Amino acid sequence: MSQLKYCQGPKCHIYDTKDRKRGPKDNKRNETRRRSNFYYLDGNACSMTCERDWFNRYGQRALQHFGMITQPKVLTADNAWRNCRDWRREGDDAFYAYNYLTEERRPITQAQYRDDTNIDDQGRLTT
Ligand SMILES: [Zn+2]
Image 1: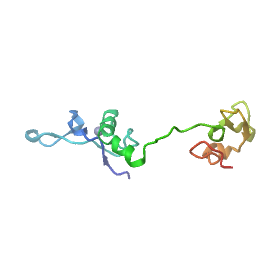
Image 2 (image 1 turned 90 degrees about the vertical axis):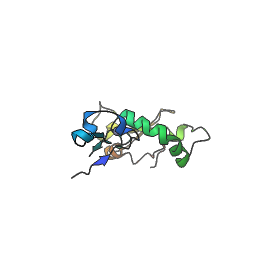
Image 3 (image 1 turned 120 degrees about the vertical axis):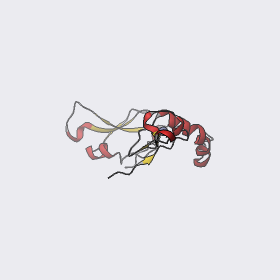
Image 4 (image 1 turned 180 degrees about the horizontal axis):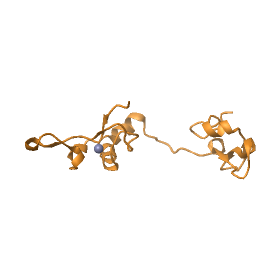
């Protein structure tokens, strides 16, 4: 059973919709939305508006916390790999790592294609 959680949008409760209304007729109030699952802010905001509100309030601090980049990131032949599939072929022959700067192709297994363990999160080959 999944647990309910609150939308993290700091202004969620001020948007006036029926599903946010709570309480008896003489004491109506709006509350932050609560759901088992959200689609925005990596599953933590009920709408793009709440996602934007969150970023407007906390984004600058989040960037400072996790570290602003101070130099450009660079794509070279070392980190230009991605896994590809040739849909005209069958079996392991259909799968390859492709370097989109040098256009080099290296064969990989179907399992590597599925789980991407042969390429790190920076696009470098690990095998
Ligand atoms: Zn919300």
